Length: 557
Image 1: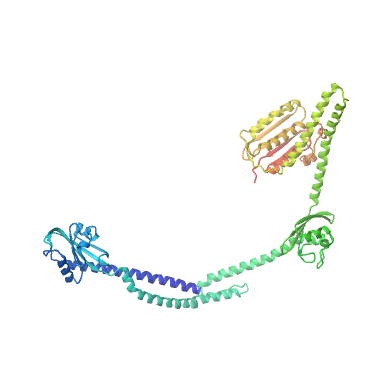
Image 2 (image 1 turned 30 degrees about the vertical axis):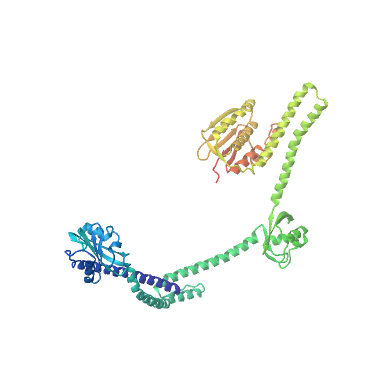
């Protein structure tokens, strides 16, 4: 602070002194030029226009005017005579500022350096209309008389003032040092005292008798209160962290080695049967875990503890290592469910394959009469189609999760009108009446193939489980969130069926499983696509009266 006060004071005063010295030098220079101009005007009154113009008369007039330079010019600017130079060597002066001004107004002034004598001169020129005689015997009709006198330049004025400026600067430095000492002694000392009091207050309020420093004291008190509040919150956060670590269902261990445990929560201690100041037993007794610790590479193992399955995730760092124990019992159950799924798929595929292979062997051995071959071929084709549909449904269901293609605007109205035509044969076969109530120009952000798959599955499901001679209604409303509804007058759903209708391989009417063409994947695919897109899928059904599936196409958040 002291150095800053000194530096600012020095800069301000030095700049002020230099600026004032330049300004005063310029003022003195202008005053000197004005005085010289007035003097030259007075000198001009001593010129006698009746005498011949020549070098001698110019020098005589110069001596009479205390050495002022005298120049005689013709009206065209040609130099006739000059008291300090050779007229023959001098160029035409018609373009000189003072000459042009004198020709226009009768007299003119100019200040510039003279190349002839190598000095700064103040020029005063006057034009005379009468004819003048020249020393060589000729005459000049109209002529100029120009007087010039040396004048100190602006730089000369400043150079003369420079010693005084330097003395002022020296005095300025001394004054600045004194002012800085005064400022630090009488102004900064209360501030220093206030800061020392705040530093040693121990969080208590500080005060000052100086009104100017009271805002600072208030700010310090507020900062102390804020720091105290932050410290209190940090203590609470530590307590919460400990509480969370103790109560979290996942186990966490931070350790350097099996014997050097830095942190372990209650769950991990219970699962690993850890006792304080004792090494973690499984780190040394379990060979696979010991090898992972020896390798120092991140790894995940699965172990069964306390009747449940846990994932042990090891992460290694330079200063410490981390073990995270996660309950994966449900994930393991899901894996088993996946295995069951594969078993169900294998069973579903084995039935048509067995039928196809059996009929093919009979045909190859000639055991089927010719009149039955056509029917057998139709059965083989039907079973092949069933197998292809099953494989396509399974692949499609699995591919939904890895589908990352971008969405685009799809005209849902146009898609429904085009797709409904493919169901006319099935509708006619079951004698179903089709009712369409579709708003025009409804567009949804998705992909055409996904929307077509959803619509086909809902309509196929409505036809398959409808009663013969019933009706099928497709409704599409517009607005900010369009809604698609597919209603049938079929067998309906019980409360148990509603809870499981979207499960894989679940069918309501078991008699349709294998004969009606359903595998229980259609609605599962619809649910998966809707959940991925953020749409609301709902079902409203009454047993024996029919079912309505509705999709609200909400914008993805």
